Image 1 (cartoon, rainbow, N blue to C red):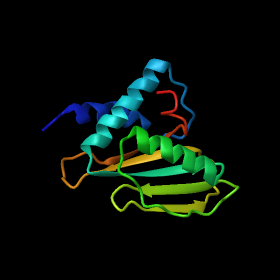
Image 2 (spheres, rainbow, N blue to C red):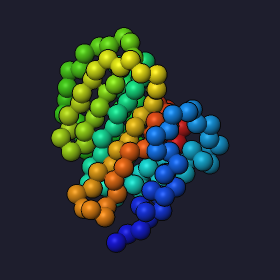
Image 3 (cartoon, helix red, strand yellow):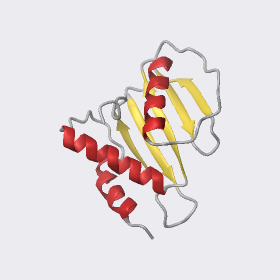
Length: 136
């Protein structure tokens, strides 16, 4: 079994249930992006949960993350416009999107990797910055 994802998962453990803003150096940011790519590539699928100020901001973050993590196209969906805080969930297995208003304080992206195997990558990481991959 390829152990690269295990090393990436170990480094990402510190970002489970992340509730505070993260101030990374450019090198640290690049490492987190690389580790997420490795972990996601080893998983069977992922889900993203995006907490943002508006649906437009959530959809922008989704597009960047989905592309950066090299995920298959999502089902085209006419999502409502929400001009207040919202939660956008993207399911990589079903290709579906769900958008709802959100009353919480967190802003950022939760990444959950799923494995069909008991010893495969599995877990939730984040909240990562909405623009994590924008500068990577």
